[in-house]
Amino acid sequence: MQESVTRYTYIESPVGALLLAGSDQLLECVSFPSGHGVRKPKPHWQEDAGAFAETSRQLRAWFAGDILEFDLPLEPAADPFAAAVRKAMLAIPYGETATYGEVARSIGEPVSASRAIGAACGANPLPIIVPCHRVVGAGGSLTGFGGGLETKKMLLDLEFRRRPPSGTLFSLA
Image (cartoon, rainbow, N blue to C red):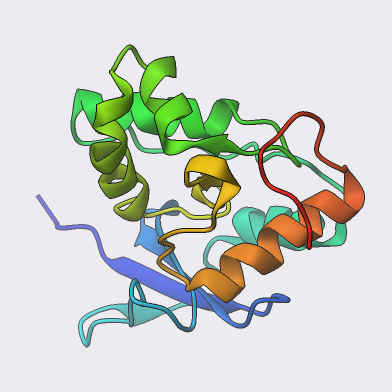
């Protein structure tokens, strides 16, 4: 059986060039151009400008404000905890935020699981599409983000300009 090839392309966005990568047209990675979670193509990956055309289209539409959520096939998370956190992140509405503690409670965990929630958010391979930027610290503080806190703030500001938050802890200062 032939091993699948990892393909990649870049898409320009308001937060810089995003790396999209995966195999057999199934997106496995979105990476920001800066921050502690930056991923770069590996030497054996194949650049393919036509790869992930639908993902690119939907990301452009999301940044333009034409869509508020994505309709893309997502590979299931590797473990049940990560899958529950991913599902909880996907349930946070556009223009809203939830704290790590709120995400913990939503999946049946105690607030003390906030660090584990943060680790699962940090391991999210599909930021923006699985909106880990909507998860904030207690009191609405911006904490931890693979693309850097400035990028997290930019993504939240973009959403808040289009749909001001109602009842969230985060406030635009």
